[in-house]
Image (tube, rainbow, N blue to C red; front, top):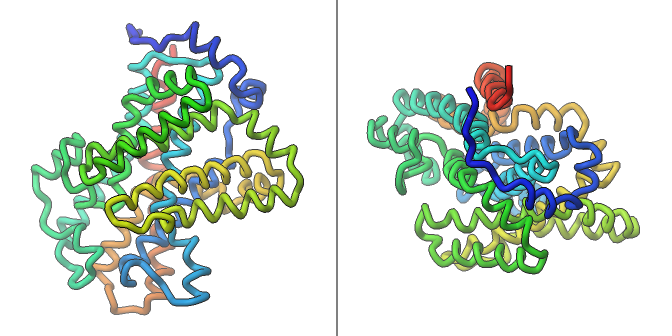
Length: 381
């Protein structure tokens, strides 16, 4: 079926972005596997993060040195900011490569890629809620998920993303997908804006969206502005990746080490810079900037690239979205069935194993078919 497109402006856009990324244009079909691996490791951190919240007050495990060592492995919210940043970066690549596409095709592909697997994970979560709701006693963090039987109204809201409903009612990880889909609807416009602005103007726009999100941050729908800012950082990084890469490679090894330490610290501890409740989300932007620094290292450091290309990170990268979607259902189902009947260490081992196995099966049976359908949209047979 041929689509009569609401096409993105291509002539001016291609002129504006002709020299955006030498690296990307020289290897137009390259997939950045390092970024897939980063996404996989971040998804694993979310798995750890939710386990800690289930069994330890405020998700804090240990004290002193133990707490300090484990803290980077429990930075679940930072991982989601990395997901948003990666989406902004990766979605920019086709446009940077001069492969602008009709808006309708872009949306169809995005819906199939994100929304299709989401519906499959929603079905799993609904089944778990129907079987094991109200099983979590005094676990305060868990009390907002599976806290009552499945309701038709809430199911419709979860399917259609309607209004300001409880995004975590059936799966504690679903909240970010609401923002992901909403921002995807306007992503081509966001790319056009950033591609035509100077670096300074883009920074001001990012700051404006961040402040707008903080000002209205108590409202679930309007907080989307804040996460738009994270996508914009990803677009800006993609636009200037060649310049950033040249700059990174020109500095001495000592400065590269310092840059890595600074990026990791800001990424992990971004929210520690803002402790006042109402503006806690102000820490999302520093977190995203730290994540951008880590992406620069991953794409330009030979050592980092080799480490991220090893089998475990690569495998986690492949199943990262599936792992993010289904691990919460595994955690809540196992807690309802086992709870405190076994040691925390044994529970964690079983939880991690079952989550990865189910994610692999979900990837093969649900996510991969939707990915293939997404690739076929707009192609001539």
